[in-house]
Structure formats: structure tokens, C-alpha cells
Image 1: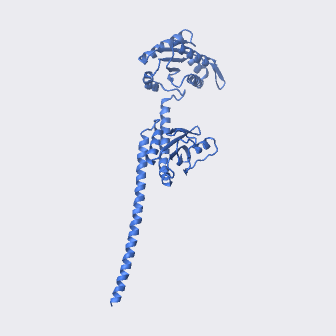
Image 2: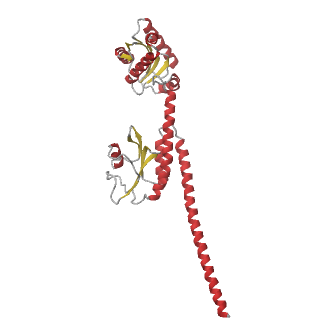
Image 3: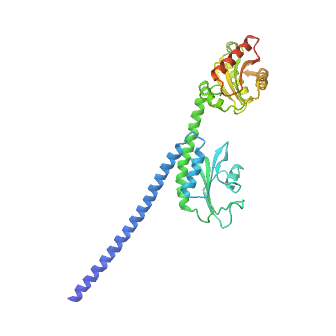
Length: 354
């Protein structure tokens, strides 16, 4: 009897221990799942915060430096570099490295040795960098793709061997997907913004944009500035004789000559109809502006403008207004340039008056 009870007790004890072990294993598996879910939740939260942080700079040149800040802050890396695809080449946009010669994947892509870029994790006892003053022993190269289109690349690096691993790749992959969307949104935003600032026919800035930025530009005008009003001579005659499409070609040709003849700091806008307004930055004097405008006037006069079976030479008249400081009222300057423009037109056209 006693032996039978002892046998039952031992069996119950074994069953209990088995169930207890099973319960502990189940709890352990659930805890692992909870930890994994917490990690995913943290990653998702991080991605959302990253997106919000980057999108605050939408339309700004700071967006690339913000991406670099994120890489350094989140991954804890020593170095971070961002490349963006421009004209089919990866251009360096932001880095805290003094030398990037060891970024071989970038050089291979730009040299067309490779046409597809893949993520690479590289750890080395030897220094990866060519510059001995910079120690790099751990690196991740990650291209930024949106769908199948390459937008750029991120390279994160650390001075400690084996610092970066597969977990960093998972995090960086999730971040790069969000960064790709932000880069594309930024590109589209800037494109829309640029289109709203440009005249659709001539490609020059609009009158509204000119007046929205001119006062700020005048504050930093250097030695002085000039306003030039340009008017295409006998423009109505071209429309009447050859049609409005020919008139459009005349406007585009004249605009392109003016735009290509000026400096990047100068500003050219379509003022209205066939009139163009120019702001010239940091001028050396009246004679300097006069000579530049005369050169442009001659270039326009020498250009044969052709469309379909029609061809003709065109001329322009120009009026110049000069200021030697940044205190001048821009409206008064435009009025002075306008007066000189009409002097040019009323005394024979195809001339520059200041």
C-alpha cells in the first residue's frame, strides 16, 4: 500500500516538474518575443521620430547634414558620410572625415566599374582608411534606394574593430528606407518650389519672386548694385509677321543669352511681356555695368533666330540705374532704369543708356 502511494507521488512529482519546466520554457519564449517586439516598437518609434526630424528641413540644404547627425547619434559611429546621386554620379554631400579615398564602392560606381550597389559590412584588424591619421576598423556601406532607383549612399564607420554588425545593418536598412522617402520628398518639394519661382516660357525668375528676394539681396550687395531694364525692340512686329510661336522663340533666345552672360550672384527675371529686369551684384562702377550690358546687347544683335522657315535678327534696348550703397530704394532704382530704357527706345533703339 505504502509503496503504491509512493509510486503515485513520484509520478505526480515528475508530471509537476515536467509541467513546471514546460511553463518556464513557454514564459521564456514569450519573454523573448516581448523583447523582440519591444525592439521593433523602439525601431518603429525611432523611424517615425527620424522622419519627423528630417522633414522639418524639407526644402532646405540642411537636410543632408541632418541625416548625418542621425547616423552618428543613433548608431554611435565615429564617422558618417552621405552621398547623393546627381547627374548619374554619387556626389559627396556631407562627411566628418578629412579623407574619403577609401570609399572604393563610390569610386567604382562613378567609374562605371559596377552598375549595382549592395550593402557591405566590413571589419578589419588593419586600418581601412588610407590616411594613417584616421583609424577605421569597422564599416557599413549602404546604398539608398527608392523602389529600384538609386538616390544616394550612406557610409558609417567606427575606429573599434567589430563595432558594427548585422544588427546595425537591420537598423540602418530601416532608417535608409525612411531617408529615401525624405530625400525624394525633398527633391519634389524643391522642384515644385523652383517651378513656382520660374517663368514657364523663358526659364527666368518670375516678377513676384524677384520682388520677394531683391531687398534681402541688396543688403549684401557688396560695393553697390545695378538695376537694368531690358526691352525687345519691335517685338509686336515679330508676332504679327511670323506668329506668336516665333515670338516665343525670340523671348526664350534673348532670355538664354542674358542669363548665360551674367554671374551666378546676379538675378534675372521676366518683368512682364517682352521686358526683362536684371539685378547686378557687387558692381565696380557705371562703366563696368555699361560695358557688360553692351556686350550682351551685341550678342543678341548678332544671334540669328530661326523657327520653321522664318529667321531674323533682333535687338534690345537697355536702361541702367546704379547705386553705390545698399540704402537705395529699389522702387526708385527701377523707375530710374525705366526712364533710361525709354530714352534708349526713343533715340533709335538697340542701345544702352545709363
